[in-house]
Length: 212
Image (cartoon, rainbow, N blue to C red; front, side):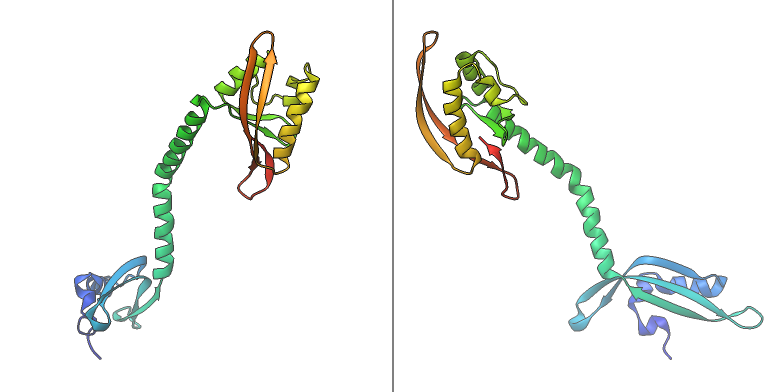
């Protein structure tokens, strides 16, 4: 029996009573989705809700508006989910840019490091190789490795060294992480000593996909 403004005073300042008056005056229904409604809850704490609702005029036989039917649904949860998705998309570009920058920094660290670094797949094809490794390999074997080359093919002119090298990489491909010291000698370059670390290469699921 109370007026809407008396029963729900929060609706007045938020414009909902004005909408009711406009529907009553015009005789035209009003429908909206995701409308924000703020009201005083328990202990006078403010509560925020989002609602879909309709104001539908009720008319008599002559078409005069005699009342307004109102029906609404609380869609706060759906609104919150939509806001989360919107925020995700709004920040996606920056997050992608940050991730790319991070990967570029890591790539630069590996590429320009003096540490010789190479990764191969399970069939001994080169997945990645840095300049330091390529320079050293070329000085030893006369072939400059690049992505897509097969390590065993590059060592086929030195079968003894190739078989020994294959043995090292094979251990890593099969999941063993280890390091060894090797000496390489030739008339062209003299004697060089290497401390080599081999590790299994795994994807994000933990599956072995190669070695480095």
